Amino acid sequence: MGVRLFDRSGKRLKLTEAGKLLQERGALLLNQFEETLKEVKETEEGVRGLLSIGSVVSCISILPPRIQSFRERYPQVTYKIEEGDHVYMGEQLEKRKIELVIARLPFEALNDSRRYAVLSLPSDPFVVVIPRSWTDYSHLDSILMKDIAGFPLLTLKTEHTTWMHEQVVRECLSHGFEPNIICECSSVAIIMSLIAEGIGATFFPKSVLSSFPNNVVKMLEIRDADFQSDVGVVWLKDRYLSKSARYFIDSFRTDC
Image 1: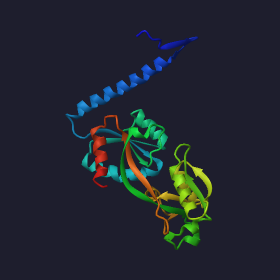
Image 2: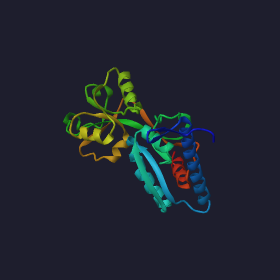
Image 3: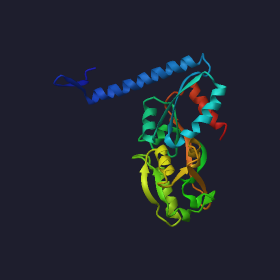
Image 4: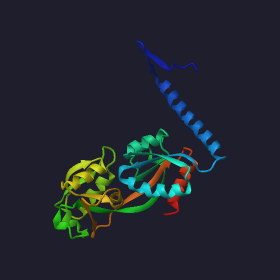
């Protein structure tokens, strides 16, 4: 090639910039070759094989009923499921480790958002989740925003995924109070555990609650606020999707 691809440092070899570029493009070509082979193979087969799905932590409850319904139609499909924040899910998409992601929108990966295709799903209303040990509220099914002003709040937030946290703060400010946030946490499960212990309350999209038992926490509808969490299916525009991935995405379209 007439281009130096490695530099020697003692006994170690280090890629030059040209070498890094060749490695990157070579990996891309291998991925494209593998996807082409998969596409050719699938022309002779039905819907089968491994479907690799990602989900952000607050959307995992969307998957079980969807997979159950899909399995009834396509029993020969098997599944690999990854969970993580938007940045991790974006990396997994780029590495071809997963084909699609169920995510809150906007999708806050580090890559150019124009690279992603998005199928928007029905919005998910926010509710307030409190400990059942807060007996002053045990008789209520709903609450006003002004009554939340004094609550110690826990919010879902990671280093790069901040939209839901910011959405909650904006809603509180629009109702005339600054939220009393005592904890920011990257884990839905940890937040729910803290609430169960009586430490505080949170705002969560309603669908999140279906993954957790309600004997230790209580959900309250918000009577005077109508803020929603947008949800969608996300995938890379420039990659081949397996037949099972395409059909899985289409299963959401029929319900939208």
